[in-house]
Image (cartoon, rainbow, N blue to C red):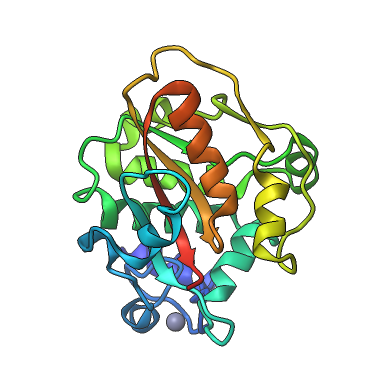
Length: 231
Ligand SMILES: [Zn+2]
């Protein structure tokens, strides 16, 4: 403990949301910001609004985001840090928070599949944020020893370099990503329950494209979990 206190003196750790110094057992987010996090509680709510949003195009088992994402919310900064500023440890930690919340709602998940980035984009960024989050989720759901075998990164492949989608209209987005994915590794996933992970659920076009291909081509059951949810 004294070593931890000493380390805090030399390398002060700050809350990723409000910037206040962290103490004791606090990790990445202070107690107050943790308490104020706008959680969805959708893990306790089958047929929640996120599920209804995505049921339009393909049947999914569960859809569970961790917290609401609004433009005014300071919690947006978590996504920015994970996605654009290389904070991989924060991504892993947030993934483990998500995993803790959803593991009781999804007791029979067989494998976790992060939404892939196009190889060029992954090369530019240096990592896939969805994969970082997925590894945190797997650790919370399956324990550290099994986690790495549970994350499958070679099943889905992104074949098209889609443009950034933030300003595009919904229909446009759907056609943009509908054929952007291919399945690669097809062994023994028929009938398995796959949990797809991404950082944010917005229109769901990307996630639906991934889910559809896993359901239709591999015969999987599919659930989705994300850190943030844009209503
Ligand atoms: Zn804070």
